[in-house]
Length: 308
Length: 308
View 1 (cartoon, rainbow over the protein chains, first blue to last red):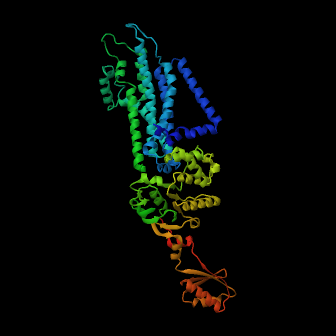
View 2: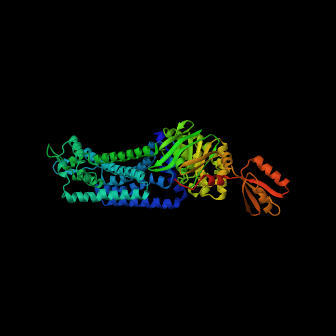
């Protein structure tokens, strides 16, 4: 860990030029930071006072992640090529893994910070100690409600982080292979529009609105949920299920406000099916696996192209 | 010692570098001369382990650049013809970055950076931001970066290109000093007078083929089989021209600006005899000197101006 933290590339990407920018133009960057801070507080206030639903708040955070994450990765390697610094870096004793970690680690740290900034906003939409009353079974135990809310909150946070991680890993890979900053940025943004908006619209048009949700309510165990999730990855439904905005909307169904409590061996519900599917976490794991794949491809490319 | 053994690079049908052989020893400053497109940069990139040769190899102190690129990289410093620098950091931070990337222990870094700054005459600029440096200073910083890990081989590709006369002189002084420090310096250029000043060995490459290589003076002597003698007579030159044309070793006489340029095939003995006989015969000679070849003459005699 110490050796990783001493990675000069990681330090440069994380602090080096950022710290100096602040030192050189404190007023400019102070104004920018102030503006961003005020906007953040305004959004927080809007969410808190207008009792925005959890899914809407998460969608807002996801939208910000979709817009900001590409900025953290679109030039990781392409700028090295464009500014002709790459050869000097390639000749140092840094290994391919260290170069990769230096660049990806810094981008992931920024994604992590962005995710943490979303936490207060999401927390206002998910109360962790509320009591919910149900007409049939009376008061639902606090512990259960807190657990359910905690599940939704952590699933939402992991969705946010892992989507950001996927975008930066994909951005890094594209930046390595395309070698052009502009091409990488435009591919990342256009790719997101295609995958998150156009593809779901096409799917819903051609599947006449069939989403597979009716099967989710029939899932009765985590094992069934796992099998069903894996099977879904090989169907067209994956277009919806891997869409973070779709996943965020469905997480709302898990919240106590829409929770139908199962009494005495009655029917399983859609929300329970989602929990058995580890909804939110399953998507996150898939995103992280894809991020790992892109990181691996970049590592392989580095080793092969530069004999590192 | 750098031992280049049959280095060859092909791009499809095009042979960019054709079976190069040469050896350099510590302290050698090797001028790699050739027209644009002759294969200089390709050769340097192969030696820098940035390009894999199609055939042949080179060893640096017995380490193979093709089979052991990771082992040889810490032993070489490379300054590309077009290079960039990491921006937003100071000169010292830039050198610290590379010192860390070359795994120089933290405790030794400050002293090494100080030495390198002194050597490259950048001490006064140690706190300046990299992007604020002039082109000449950036060139020196790039060289300083190539020196932090104390390499034994320096590969400098057109180090003086784009520099003003003062910066050129400073770079020349620096290269001469590096040679005196016992480093092997390979410096490419197509500006010959600047190489003549500080190289003890040269290699002339054209169309990817190393036409000649060796000690500068020896090559010049080889090329000087036909000497040119400049004779400045007092009075009318015509009788002297007729007299010279009768000499066995004289192949021709040209007149320019009141001087006679005599193409002379003899050695130093015959040259001395000629002068003595002219004076003995009563010709009044104001100046008599051998016109020596410079690198430009050698280059023009050897090359045909073709690219690979």
